[in-house]
Every structure is written in structure tokens, then in C-alpha cells.
Figure (spheres, rainbow, N blue to C red):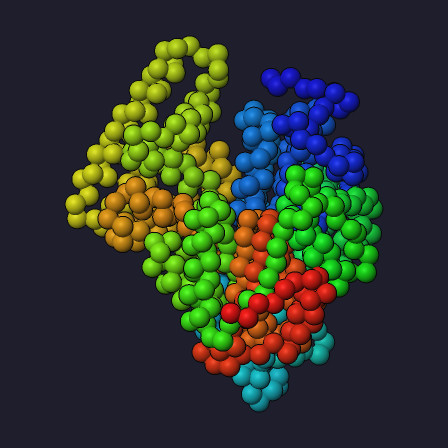
Length: 627
């Protein structure tokens, strides 16, 4: 049984110093929202709040805390921080999930409670992407009545359909005057969900709509959900969609559950995905929430903070003045624009500069990030080639970000390290702690228990190592089997209980097999397990990604490649959102930011449409250098 402390005697974990507003937010007893700019420590604030609630039993046993993030790596980061600050005993009462994972869990756990007209088959297909091509395949199966128009479904604007097919709460209502679009939406739902001997098909937005409807129709389930959690955390709240907000309201509004939302309107970059306008104001009204504003920027050097302030003022009228951390000297932080005649010159110069930074400043390649607005393979492919000439690795992160954030992947990597390396003390400690947790062994356990458990682990690691050495004729099936053997050693059912995200369906196997696919590719390329593991993790590899993928991350140096009209091709339609994306890119950097412009990138480039971005940089005192 944990020993709880009083609220007055609680201090932040790791003796971390919180600014006054942050400490008030940590101890708040009401619904609240925290406005926090880049580098303000939003994730750390939530981790400290979890620590406070659990260590003081303000979140009373056996209730839990639910944290909802948008990205898998953000959810994992928060879970890891709470574990570090609270220890396993208390951290088991903290669940960190993405919005999609939260909805999917309810969808699968309470499938039979879903109203029949929207209930999927037990085995269903989750469509990660549902675009025009997939929609066309559905439309082929539908036959609308002739009175809705002579063109039938050919008269439906598919872009409009994809924006509206989950726009309304369920159930769908038959209007007195029907339209071909409304008919198409209703019947697409019916076709995708009603299996007729095949698996139902669902998208994540559909799942959220169905779960929200199920909760409205089943107050007992809603009551059970509210009795499970005492507190709910919402990260990056500015990017919450109307669909997600409707689910949040139905699940927790007018209940005793205390909600804490954190975010920053200046970083609202998910409008294209349906992010709400004025999310914080809507939440404040609906949940009677208190506001807290954080001023500190613990990430960026003073000069960069001043420059960010110029950008922030352009995004909101009531932008607060951020204060840099005292660990920096006043004159630290640089930002430049590099102008090139063509992308070849750009790639050669950028690669040489990165080589010089690594050699002269000792920067780890992992602490340099290359960003693009769109299509990193298009904007950064030649830079990767030039870097390889200096034996500097760089890769486009894309799906690897998601797979590396999976908790089971971290566990398997620790097993592989133990099997490959002579010394891997951190991995040994991680696995032993996990086995202690699985087997209910605490620090006071008898020596014989610990001895037997560690011997069993050594035998398994030895066998795993032998299997890896025996792979003369390497195949994907062998790699899949080897990785799955670690799951079997730990016990698949227990692993599912420890990591709730794997509790339902075959998601655990899908993740393990996806990991096997990547590792197999690296093994074929590198020829050794040690190199393949390091390349899979990304050790000494420069990450390349889009701005959207960089949210929540930070690096010593950020290079944004292609500050050009063609990269911001919708700037005139979504100026505020693209300016916010520009702000996010700028604010990932701790010490240095570089923007590049190439006059020729396959074809002639311009920057007249995004002149306002260059004007902001000029107002912030950013230098332009022609190279």
C-alpha cells in the first residue's frame, strides 16, 4: 500500500521548480485549462499534476487518471514521465492514450452495447486512410433513387463528402427533403458497417461518433466510465476536433471528473483535420473552467524567444511575453535564411554545414532536425544523399515515429540489445523491473526468487542470441518469429494487461510484425543485428519530418528546407493555419534555426505568396544570406 503525503507537504518531483501559475494548475481542484507557449513545459506540468494527484491520493484509490494526447509518442512520453516520478505502484493508475486509442478501446469493449444499426461485426477492418479511391469503391456498390438526380453518385463532390460524412452526431436523420450528398452519407455508413458476411469497415472518426452515440444511449456505461477516472488530462487541446469534443462532453460533462486541458492557440495547425475554432473558449464555457497562463520558455535561447514573440504577436492579439530560461546567456540563439540558386547547391552546402557542426560543436546528429512543410522525400532526398558522402545518416521518420512509440517495441528492443551486446545494463534493468512487476516481486523479495527469475532471463537471452546467430538464410518469417518469442516469454495475456492499448483484437501482433518488417529491411541492408537495431532506433541518425510530425519535439538545431510558395501552396486559403505551422517549425529549436530558399527546385520557385512570413522574419531581425 503506497504511503500518501498531504497536499501541503507535496513538492514537485525531482525538486523541479514550477512557476507560480504552473503550481496552481498542478493543485487545482476544478476544471481548468493551461495556455502554454512552446518550451513552457506542458508535458512536464501534466506529469507533475499526475504525481501530485497520485502521491496525495487526491485521485482516490482505486480511481485512475486518464491522459489523452494526439500522437503516440506524446502519449508514451507522458506515461514514461509519470512512471519515473511516481514509481510503478502509483503509475499503474495512470493511463496515457491517444484520442483514437481511447475511442477504439470503448468501441471494442462495449461493442454489444452499440445500437444495432451502427454495430460493427466482431472482426472489423480499421481503415487508417479513407480517401477518394476508397470512397469510389463504396459508391460502386450503391444505387441511389433516380429522383435524387440524373447523375447519381457521380454528382457527389467527394471532397465535400469526406469533410462531412462524420460531421454530425448519430443517428442519421432522414430529412423531409433529401439530397444526393445526405443519401450518400447515410448509405455509405450502412454499407461499411453492415457486414453481410464480410468484415465491417470503420475509420477512427466513425469510431468516435459511434462511441459517443453509444454513451448517450447507455447511461450505465457512461456512469461506469466516470467512476473509473477521477481526472482527465487533454494535451494539445487546440487541435481537438468537433468529433473528439462531442465525445469528451458526452463522456465527462456535468460529472465529478476534473478535466485539465493544456495547449496553445498559436500552435493550432490541424485545421485541415477538423480542429475546432476557439476550442479553449468553448471548453471554458461548457466546463466552467479556470484559466492558467504560463510565461516561461525553458527550451529556446533568448534571441530565439524574442523572435518567436514577433511571430506570436501576429497570430493572436493577446499574446503574452515569454521569458527565456536563466540557463542561457542573453546573446545566445541564432536564426538565418539561406538563399540558393538551385537545390543541388542547397544540398551540398547544407550537408557541409551539418558536417562542420557535428565535428566542431560535438552535436549529436539526433539533435539536428530537418523539416519541410510537405513531402520530405521531395525536399530532402538530395540532402540525404550528400550527407551519406560524409557517412552521416539521415532518414525520413514518417511511420517510424509511431512504431517506436509503442510500449511493446521498447521492451523487445531491450531484449534484442541484451542478446547482441556484451554490456547493456540499462536494458537489463528495464527487463528485470518488468519481470518483477509481472511476477509480483518487490524489493523485499527473497534472494531465491530474484535468483531464479534472473537465471530464467539469462537462459532465454542466451537462446535468443543463438537464434540470431543461426540466421544464415535470413527471412522475414524468421524475424517475426524471433520477436514474437519475446512476447511469449513475458506471456502475451499479461503483456496485454500491463499495456491497455493491446487489450483488444490483434493490435499487439500487428505492431510486432510491423517492427519485424523494419528490422528485416535494416538487417538486409546492414548485415548485422547490432547495426540493424541501432538504425531502427535511429541512433546517430538525423531525423527528417514534416512540421506536423515535429509537434511536441525539440532539437538543438532545426533546418527548414523550402520556405517557398510551392511548399505553402494553400497559404492564401489558410493563412492563419500555415502561419501557425511556421511558428511551430521555428519554435522546435533550442539554439539555432535555419530556413532555406532555392530559386530553382525542379522548376522555378517564388516566395511572393508567403511574403508575410518573410516580413515576420525580417521584423524579428533574421538575416538573409545568399550562398
